[in-house]
Image 1 (cartoon, each protein chain N blue to C red):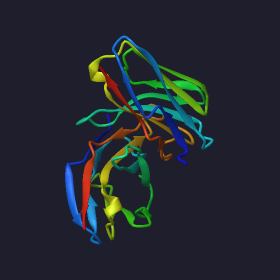
Image 2 (image 1 turned 180 degrees about the vertical axis):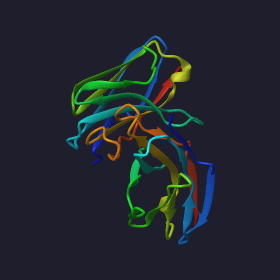
Image 3 (image 1 turned 120 degrees about the horizontal axis):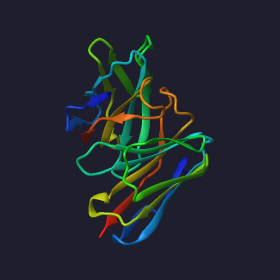
Length: 116
Length: 114
């Protein structure tokens, strides 16, 4: 069974600084995809970044980058130059090849607060 | 305008009522999903539809009944709900159900059961 662990219930960061949100995962499947989503207080979930298990490079999307360490089964999200609008809940999620098609597993989430 | 639209945004109902949640996606996707998000719990997948066919029912009680008339629309019919069913219900879609496809979510329906 696949499992996602986010050990930081809450994080604080000063505006314009970088922050790392932790995510570790567990799966027996060598082929899987990892995702990060952002959920502001308004409720909608916003897709941020994707990393495939066979991707050679760490994924980057603007100010978001994924620190993918396959041997450690970790996929930490790095947000550079934090902005006040980055304050939200962040979820790490995974899909692997062996689970029923379409099924994603989500972590418990990390609440990020950006301080001015 | 969001690519995935959910209505209503808020719903308050009694335990004996029957209501439906609606989800519409304008992204041309083929897979659609219902999730339940309760306070202090991780996001729970409820149902998955791929090309209008249900591919996943994650042991959801029968008081929740999904309907997918076409790839753009997804409904969740509710009847005789319990107080513990109060939660945020999120609809999502993806191009396909492949593992590399991100999901696009709606704003959710916040459901309160009296």
